[in-house]
Amino acid sequence: MVNSFLQTKLTSADANLPVLLRDWREDTMNFLRHDAPKIVFVLVVAYILIRLLRAIARKTADLHARKLPPGLRVQQVRTVASVITSVGVFVILFVAALEVLSLLGLNLGPMLASAGIAGLAIGFGAQTLVHDFINGFFILLENQYDIGDVVRIAGVKGTVERMSLRQTVLRDEDGTMHIVPNSTIQIVSNATRDWSQFALRVTVAYSEPSDKVVKLLKEVAEEVRHEEEFADDIVSDIQVPGIDRVGPGEAEYLMLIKTRPNKQYGVSRELRRRIKECFEKNNVQAAGPGRIYVMDQGVTKAS
Image 1 (spheres, rainbow, N blue to C red):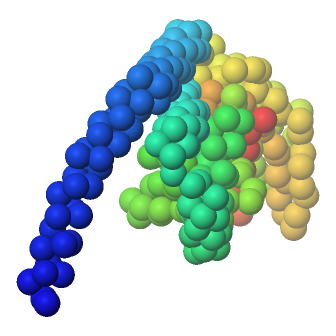
Image 2: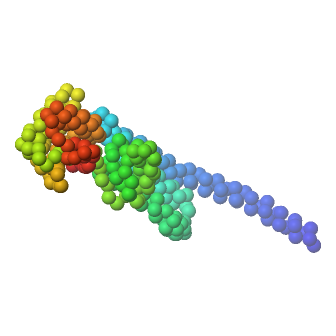
């Protein structure tokens, strides 16, 4: 009984095998004649679009880089071009993958629904990371600061050493490195954009004639302004508005100096040295015993 049943099954399978092989052959030939060329066409078009996108991004970045002064914003321009290229490549590959899967006869509905749910879960878990990248992109796009700029961001101040879409790395005056996620940056204070300005407050005895003090300060300012070593660093005439404050037994005079970015420190040291020598030479009295002429109350700012 059992042997008879097995023999019947084997006989049926042997009879259906040629039919299965014939159907498989017909499906394969139909796929090769109709669907395979379409898949190849989709892949070729995707490849050409990716190459074209990368070539356009590269040429655009090189064109903008040549128009910029040496070393200025070149890295940022290339970073933005790279980001745009990456997003474009992802979109092209995603659309091509959907087209290929549909040509293979796969039902995309459940797959897209699953991908949507997974993407939603990942999005909730990576909100901060996405915020970092969005903020970083606009920082680069809007040229809020460059590598080498002195900035205050997220409550810390320092020189920008590295910057990316994810984070900004600062080095402060004592060498401490601060790694700031771009999502935490709300306000950017750039102390070295276009020009820097600092204020010198010169304090002398109240009895010293104002005209004499202002005249001496202007002479020192003119000397430093036209000194070959500092002529390129100072971007405009040094201003001496006059008395800024009067206190017990003293008068404070203000000097305002505009310099190129990061050049204010050397100029301020030279001005302090020459003011001291000039006042000693012309017998200008300090405000009192133990007092100094130039107060270290400079304020650095930028346009």
